[in-house]
Length: 461
Image (cartoon, rainbow, N blue to C red; front, side, top):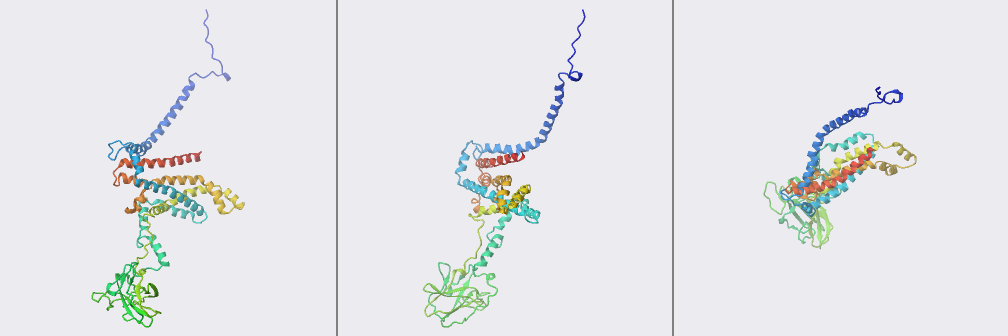
């Protein structure tokens, strides 16, 4: 009986024998191992960053959410009571309103200023130097910028440069009080009226000469051109004359109510002659304090020193008062971040196709039409990213408010980030309520962050 030979495997095209059944699996194993190795290496490189992200971001968020459900001591579970209290507290509601003002005003102004400056910068020769100059405030910390603007907004024109400019412009067009804070000496026969003026009794007739003594004028405020007080100014028919003098004798001595040796006149003082409540004559004192009011008819008159002589000088604008403190701080924020907006928008402007602009100019469009109908629409993605980024940033503003706003008006400038700090650590010592405010701030920021991330992904596609 003969043995049967095994059947030969079927021949493949070209006569070569087929590959073993497990060859394809053996070929793919090294590929899979290489992929797993790459993923493992990538995970090892990402691990430090993930650990930092978890420790510095994820864990604080989860802890704050949990802490917001407990009372101030952190021992008693109160549920949503902190969130209810947050919206009942008028201080927190004020912070919410101020934050809304920041969100509406600051990003819009910054985006608009950045767009205008980016467009105008393309028209100047020294564009790079201008951009560098505008971007320099970004290198200054918020602490330093806050100190700079705290001094800039000082009420005292001697220290606050902004009020120094305002006062200088005001005094250019308005009369400055001659002797602010001065007052009349009682022995001179002058009495103070309700409006702040000083006047004599209405028993003076033309031809009389009077001396009006003033005190309360610091030596440094006596004009340099003041001369010794005139002792006998010339009067006459239809004339009331007199001397307004500083009723103070250097070195002591002298008699109140009269002109003594060494006393000086007060130039620039306005004097009025009053009859039956009506001003019938005016004069201004000379360097020796003398004055003459002429053209008076017979009868009795009173002499009056108007309140404008003694009024306090114009002190400028109360930039850090309750009404203007928030706009003032927003102004400081604009100074810091305008360069950021300008540079980002300028980058988008440089990438814009120039042939579209040239075609519009050839078709007869003016620069305003090009800006409104071509430049702005083409820059819309960049403008949106800048605006949303600034919205996220202003929701977290804290440093400028804390440094610039004085203590008495801190509540008027309060924002959510500041309120969170005040409630938790700045005296409130209620970290449960502070955590609730922090969660609210997070919920307000997250939609803007999601919008920005989606925008970036769409632009990458």
